[in-house]
Image (cartoon, rainbow, N blue to C red; front, side, top):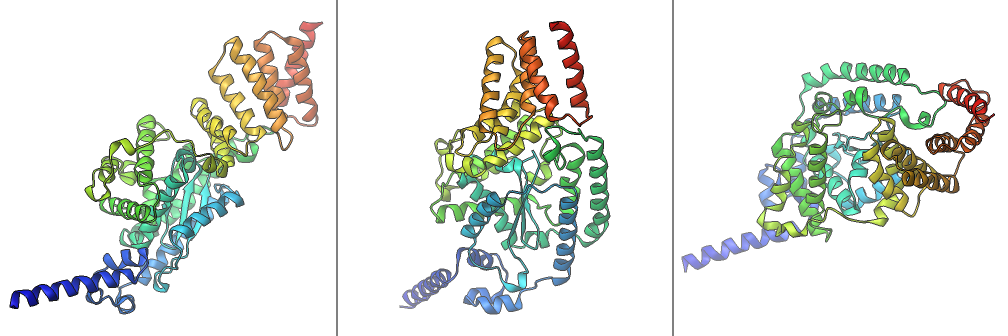
Length: 440
């Protein structure tokens, strides 16, 4: 009888625990499950919030430091501005976490994009999620993007930034952030290409000097230097959210796999991922091999065609390609340009960038004719004037020994920049003089 009574009490406790769980949203329950408190056992959420140690002093220092960092990004024109894409990200973020964070946490979700070919995403204690054009371009489906965003929301929910914070390091690093911003500005000015195709978006490319603002030292000072345990914890919470909400259960594993492929491809280069920030080794296996998820290797699909996703990020694909081409990474730009052109919202710029990339990677007669066809498409799909189409045409016609066509293209190009004295137009003037002399 005593044994039966004990079993009954245990079952009653389990039942009450399950009942309490159903009273909370996914993210509230995650916070409850990961908070040490006597009240948790009784399911008293409000009392737990009241008694929780929120560490307001460090939280404020982190918020101030993050704001200073964001100001530096804006001063250096590092943000990628696309209101439609930004709104798309907000829609996804609020699908993932529709309810407010606890008032004591001082977290208000905010999404910003940066122009960087490096696939980056991180979040600050105040709720600002940063995602790079490189990350948006690396991912190939909406579910993969949602999995990555869910990871950042997991970090915020569990206050990983505040846990990882070092006040002394942050105070010391703020001056470094400002110094890095000045360094970027001076370097970008030295790289000014004048009246060229790159003017509008070249500044802000986080490659080379700009990578200082994405360095592990700077970001870890802002609370983004998670250890491996916190990284894996956020992965697992994101995986659980994806499965509970009937999203592709393999999306997070696919996204991590893409990061691993990227890291292998760029190891030893300026685009290399920081191992102590990404902890890519075993992360893929950590998700795939957990029995509770019931995933199998055959479910991984690395060659997806998500037209809806590519259409939503079409301009981002173009921008990231432009940054790659500006840094002479032509072969890397081509797959992204194919995705941009294959979407429902393509542009003349994407065709022009494809032509430039092919000119630097192909040379046969057939390739050159193909490039001319692509330049025709660039002109047809242009929403604004793209005079650089004519300089590209001229170069291809010169390859084909078609001097008259090359001359006509250069004259069109020179006419557009008649009052300009940049290196590009001075080159055009010299070529026009040479061709006129040779033809006559």
